[in-house]
Structure formats: C-alpha cells, structure tokens
Image (cartoon, rainbow, N blue to C red):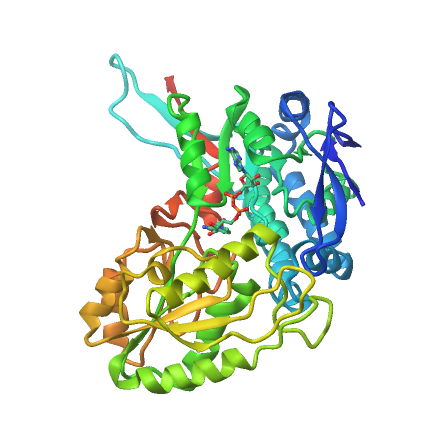
Length: 479
Ligand code: NAD
C-alpha cells in the first residue's frame, strides 16, 4: 500500500520523495509505505488551504457547507465495511469496536455539526451610543482561517472527524497531520471528501513524522489555530513552540481515569462498565478507566469477578470475529506496556489476572489486572495506554475523591452508586472534564469533551467546539 499526501484535491508523494514504513500490528509485517513530508509539503498544503478559504469556502452559504458535511456522512456510512477493514489492519482493533463506536460516531458527529453550520449567529447589543448619537452595535462570527489538526493513532477516523466537522461547519479550511501509525483510513477519508464535492484545497492531508511534518505545520505563520489530540508530552512541546504566537490552541491530552465503586454500587452492572473502561481499544483510550477504586466492603467480590472476566477475554487477530482484543499499535508500545506489568510486580502489586500466552507474531499483550493499596504507585499514577488496570480499595468516599484527584491528569472519571445525592455531590468534587455516573465515558457529539490539568485545554465536540473555530467581530454604526 502506498500512502500519499492530499494537497489541493490531489494525491501526491512527499516533495523529497522520502517515505517511511508502517507495520501491521497483528502480524508485524510491512503494511504500507507512507510519504515522509517536510516543510515544502506543509507549505504547499497551507497555500492550498488558504486559497480555498479565501476563494470558496468562507463565502459559500452556511447551508451549502452543511449539505457537504451531510454528503460526507452518507459516504462514510456507505463505505463502513471498507473503512472498518482499513482501521482494523492499521490499528489492530477488533472490527466490532469500529462498527459499534467509531463509524456511527463519525457519521453522527458530521451530521450534528452540519446542523450547526447555518445557526452560528452574532448578536445585536444596545448601548448608550457614541458622541451624542445613537449607534447600532452588532457582532459577526467569522471563521478563523486555515487550521491545523494533529491526530493520534488510537481512533484516527473518529478523532479526525471530531475536529474536521466543526472546523468545516464554521467555514475554516484544514490541514491534517495523521499519526505515522494510522495514516491509511484517513487517506480513504480524503477520497470521500473529494467525492462529497468539498472543493479542492478545503481539506488537505500531510503525512509524516511528528517532529518534522507536525512541528512544521503548527509553526506555519498562516495557520490560525491548532487543534491537537495526543500525549501530554507532545502537547506541551506544541504549546512551547507556539508560545508568543497567540494562536488559539486546543489540546486533548492524556488521562488516568478512575472508576469509583461506592459501597452501594450495582456490582453486575458496574462490572460491564469497568471492563469496557479498562479494555476497550486494548486500553489505548485517553479515557481508559485503569484505576478501579473500590470500597473495601465490596473489594474482594469486585476483584474476583473482574479477574474472572479479564482472564476470559479472547485475544486474537482483529479480523477474527471471535477476538475481543487485538494487538497494541507497535513494537515499542508493546515493550512499554510489558514493562509496566514488570514494574507492577516489582512494586509489590498482586497480579489477579493476566500472564496468559498471546499470539507470538504481532504486538499482543495479555489483559492484566493488579490489586495494590498504594494510590501513589507507578501503576496508579502513569498513563499506561494498554490493557493493564489496578484495583485500589478505599475506606470512605472522601478518600476515594482524594485518590481520584491525585494524578496529574484530569480527563474523566466514572462513578458507580445508587445514591443520587452522593453521586452529584462527589461529581462536583472530582477535578476532571467529564464525570460519568453508572456508565463509562459515553461520548456524544452533543457533549463537550476536554480535560483539566495535564489532560489539556479546550474541547472537542458540542457547540463549544464549533465556536472555538470562530472569532467575534464587533461592528458599531453611528446612526
Ligand atoms: P503522540 O503525542 O505521540 O502523537 C500525536 C500526534 O502528534 C501524531 O500525529 C504525531 O505525529 C504528532 N506529533 C509528534 N510530535 C510532534 C511535534 N513536535 N509537533 C507536532 N506534532 C507532533 O500521541 P499518540 O501516541 O498518537 O496518541 C496517544 C496519546 O493521545 C495518549 O496520551 C492519549 O491519552 C492521547 N489521547 C487523548 C485524547 C483526548 O481526547 N484527550 C484522545 C485520544 C488520545
């Protein structure tokens, strides 16, 4: 497979002709050669996006822009099976996850923001007037211009659409930098963008290595805003690179979500949610609920049931319909996650599930669960981004909140209780962007998604996301 850039409506290799190799997670074999872009490719893409912004997209009626997004949603729906196969091969995720989650959410997100396109209205504001005369004062919402979207590998299509749909609805044009680990499904998305009649240059894609292509893109002087999803470390590097430029920045970064079970939790219902939070996408989600905080009175029961369910997970090839868990994204990441399992044992955590054989080829890791009372341990503090969780018993509810708030992250938390009053009281005390009560992180285009602390700034999704691509201009007319 050859993966090229998409610039000004055309696929093309990197200007330098350089490429890098992308391996298939399930086999470790070569899957694609990908354009390794540099400054010249970024310049060409930003120039195309700027021309499209000024020439067609900004001035297209908002209704027409919305219709293009609806058309793109229809095409993604039409190509569901093809896209799922591409995602499974490049990411290693079992196909059922993309069928249940990524594709429906991408489609719904496009349709939700399509609806916003013609509802972005300014305001009229009464004042005392100016220089003795009455004035008419109003605001207009203007698209910011050309925006950069930097995408991670863990849900490439869905997260790309989270950013693309509000930007296009607002009237911005876009240059996308996919992850070097997941460039393939987004290449297909570019074909659909052309087929949907979105004009040439409105959406451009530049592949390449983060510190080369990504860094050149965010620093380009004609980029008006940057929206990044990825690790806290790279988010921090981008914030440093942009310091002094005043470019608005949305950063969706790492997490270390707690899933808290109070003493009265409905245990059977909670177990399903806990497993999803722990192991969806092989634990490679920003909202991964890898810290299970359980009230001491039910800790043994929960640990026993979770361990049995974890040891029953079928690990296998992502396109095997029986497989419930596939491989991790690449060899380095597998080694990193294996190392956390060793560290957990070294720190004295008790392993209650895991240690089973997994397929030898490819980058598989066995789902693993520990019990460890120390909320300050490496397992409980660091984002592992793999199928490894730790159960931490607690004695009272305030202690649970204290533990939940004790990491540098603040993205999301799940809380399991049947006491309505406690649920809302504790939700207020937990320092995260999203609290889910009696469920695990339900994502929806209508609900803002963003983190506190080292989990980032700004939001994807919801009305908040579309307004983040707009700026407000005030006009005053002396009457
Ligand atoms: P990453 O930070 O390694 O890479 C993300 C993207 O940044 C890639 O496209 C990469 O090429 C690019 N990049 C790397 N260096 C860059 C630089 N100097 N300048 C510009 N771009 C650069 O992250 P990843 O491994 O792809 O994704 C996993 C991380 O993403 C995890 O930490 C996870 O929690 C986070 N994540 C967060 C959310 C959220 O909504 N908060 C969602 C998904 C993933």
